[in-house]
Length: 357
Picture 1 (cartoon, rainbow, N blue to C red):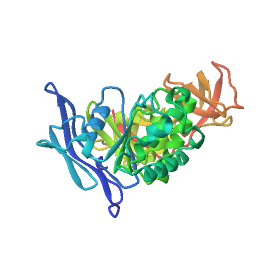
Picture 2: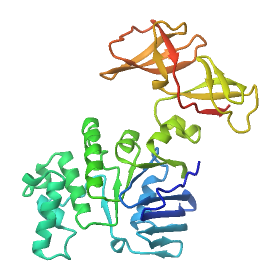
Picture 3: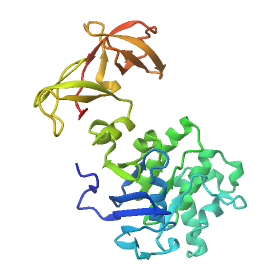
């Protein structure tokens, strides 16, 4: 799998990072970072704190310089080792973590801030359009302190989109909001970006945000791109152990290769390709997701309930197998089992991912 693969070749490439690197006081922040986005695509840099994702965003914006590689925006070179186009000339919009709204300006004037090259009537029309896009038509005269966090976020988004930038950057835009609002706003922001045909890059450590908003996601770890792919492929076809562990709530279960296309684990025999550099009889770890384990009272395989988390329609059960190994399973919430109780489970897995031990 090519971790630097771009989107459809027949589209218009709006952002291209070609092997960029960044260092700070002789220490590498990230190395050889490559990906591209077509017009209207939403990308995301996802990873734990300190992985280099925010610095990469700042390099795209022009706030940081790169030590190798090149960045192109809308076909124009904006950064290389020996060249850096000033941030204000890159035609890039940015939504900051703290929104950075001007407290002394009302909503209309905040949105109009980046439209100083337009005449008054054109500015008013564009502000009216953006207020409608973000659903804040009735709050044009309100000031930031009179708005909720979600409303402030939408104003920041409207202000960034108003000048019709070639690229929009969003730096942890929902980190100050509660979980429920973050999930709802994520869906709304994606809809707004798609309606505006905006090309955007989101930075977050929250995979739920990334999955809700992005078309393509890059997993960063210790400054290295582990995989650039669709959310579906990241979940079902992780390129390595880090991605498998970081995405979703899977467990790596030990197994043995019985044949080139067959692996035996405690939960049963599964059809799977042998990992590279593996032979018959070698030991592997198989990724088992919560949705791969089905609650089945008729199954001879029994597991004990170690813990459970209620999620409304489902319980997330942590189950202990006879060997002592633990797995997780999503079970409809009408199956409310006690801790220590044994329940029947069976494996129903479509995407088998195995790594050599």
